[in-house]
Length: 495
Image (tube, rainbow, N blue to C red; front, side):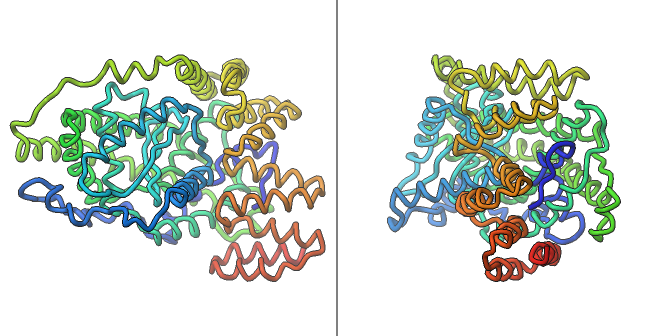
């Protein structure tokens, strides 16, 4: 994939952003999240939902070893890095969250399917579960929860998706294949905003588009079933099930905040003349479709969150009218954030959050954000890929190329950097005609990110420059069936 460094930095940052939902808007992909109430097995259920589905819940059949499970979860981590996210360096907090999850899992009889929880450093309220059972919860989400019961409610909901086998491998493959089809197109656009503030607001919306398109967004029926099964899990684990409605209220408020932000900050792009002649697509329409689809999904999510709260309350009244209501575990929850190493690292991530916020809200945000980010990359988080990539963005925007490069290389050296970091480094090697170094990085990306198809044009260019045969790469490109990607591969092979 061709990445333009420098004045097109924002476009690079949103490599998997507008393009993913934008392709849905152009009718090239089914909107899987809008499939109504499909799978709504908990609707009108009499008796406890868990009793009805107990024999259908996904379980470990003993054929998967611990080593294989770890490898599968690593694949899920690679997937979020592919979506330009990272895992936070919060080992004690992650251990605590996994202990809460283990309590929920142990409440089930037999050998329920294994899963694990990772913390991402983002400020936004978000949680999602990927195909192999890796559950991702952002630091911002953990900080917005008030007690262990709410944490358990969120984990129970995410684990319910795993237990009910809601993941579809075909869905993931289609999203990847068609979503990335437009990555090159967006990379050849630039933000219409002149100010740093507007560019960062554009990037924020772009990240939300990515989340909606790349990470699971269940249909109504699946969300309902996960909510109701989560209530059963909470009560079996001796948590206060009222935490489920409290958690869903936070989801409602979070979605409302996003709705307001998106409505006030419409995204626009402009076309360069050379791009107009080379690509037969209206980039402004693509961006409008992307944001329009995001607005539609946020509207749906907002209404859904309110309805889901009512369904949970109705289910509790119907099946658990005389349920125990233990006090919320607030003190024990806050204690884990006060552990010395955790408190220090959370403080540094919060400094990075403030830096990002300053870039969006203050016209002089760039200079104010730099010292905040310097604090974020000190001490124990000195080699954190999230903080380093933020500092890369800041230094590059300040036109401090050497310092920006140091931060980019340190982000890559962590071994947990987002794919964006690899792509920037490959592009730099290609610009400097360092094709052997570019080849080494591309081979690493093939392993880390499971052979992403959008790499193929650049891989063909590099191999051709090294005098190697490119026929197998061209065959891989043809096998995608993606006309635009095939066109780019053919151009690379002839260049």
